[in-house]
Amino acid sequence: MSIRGQEQVEKKYDPHDTTLTFVDRKDELDPMCDDDCLRAEMSCGHAVTPDSLTNWCRSELDKGNYKFRCCALVEGNKQCNKLWSYPEVCRLADLSVEEMEYFEDNMARLAAAEYCEVQTCPRCKTSVERKDLSNLCARCTVCTADRKKAYDFCWQCRRKWKGPGPRSDRCDNDDCIDGNLELLQTCNTISLPAVEGVTHCPSVRVCPTCGMKVEHSQQYCKNILCPRCQVEFCFVCLKLKRECCKTSSPYRICPGGVAPRQTSVPVWKRK
Ligand SMILES: [Zn+2]
Ligand SMILES: [Zn+2]
Ligand SMILES: [Zn+2]
Ligand SMILES: [Zn+2]
Ligand SMILES: [Zn+2]
Image (cartoon, rainbow, N blue to C red; front, top):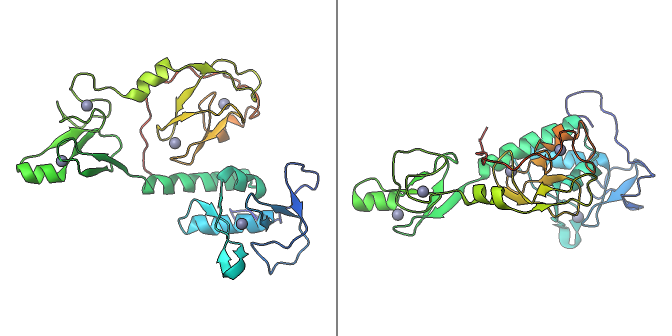
């Protein structure tokens, strides 16, 4: 089924696709459906069709859930509830390019809205939440009430804030540095055996969307799903996967080559 009101064409698996496991059981996401569309098995062992999987995940997404869990009924009328990864959903739901964009935009928006960082106040040790991810200057309400005077500390070096705020890079305390920035400059380079032509890629990258530090397992293709913001990006050229895949295969070096070491950490912007 397509998302933008184009004509609804039923999706079907390619019977020659050897990466899928086809099964003879009914569609366990939509047991009432009795058309003879080929069913494939998910990682949890339940059988789906591309349409039933698309519909279920789409309805979950529209309810605000961006982590997809199997709804097949198991004994005692409980749900299987196993978590499916987005790449698995993408493949077995046979998502179109428009559907992928719809899913990824919404997953990223929901993940950003839910995300919140917590750090302990260096003075009173209570937990402080940070909503503005671009400001390192954090106010502890407990200490502020206690001292009857504003108490701010630095999110990065966890000392009393020094200098004018707000700032996103550092405070004025000596050696207030972003450990990730240093790591980006000093980490080893690796090869990606599954990706043709990639021999000297920095082993640590920060996600271009949210700034989270990620390493590549060296086992799979060049794309990585960021565990924090749920956006896939190419570890080699650092473009979003959906941009990079327009010009090259996931198993071959990108036309622009390996992007140099990153020199700044992107700040996650909530839409
Ligand atoms: Zn299941
Ligand atoms: Zn405090
Ligand atoms: Zn600092
Ligand atoms: Zn991210
Ligand atoms: Zn790339």
